[in-house]
Length: 178
Image (cartoon, rainbow, N blue to C red; front, side):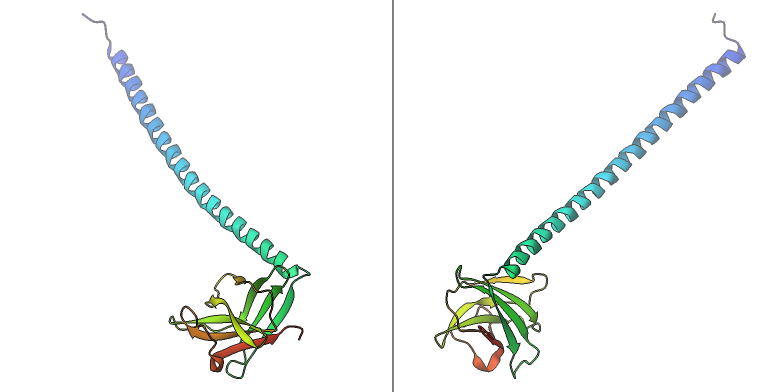
């Protein structure tokens, strides 16, 4: 027969109870640590995405700043016409590299079936430099290249552009050297 006294049974029950409490407490603490780790991973991923987005935006701004401050680029300011007196834009044009960039300053939102179209006037004839929508975020729009231009104009055309400008829908116009 086993020699157990009531006090040793109580002690054994106490040790078992204590062990159960320790195991349950450890499991609870491990789950809490796991939850904290998952929350930190999620937060880290969100911060990484914001960093990547900010880094990309900073790179874009730096590239645009280089273009705007390039001394070989000519700035042609396009003023509003009678049809759109508030429409304003600027063309940054490097005739040596033939690159054309557009900064839209004040162009209203268009219906979805229309787009703006930039034209270069070369020896009195219009040349298509591309279509664009009212930019939401992008400050500088890369347009098609041209080596020559006497002036630039922006018209409203059907979505996809036109082979010739709709002069009655000319929004802004500007000459080189003015």
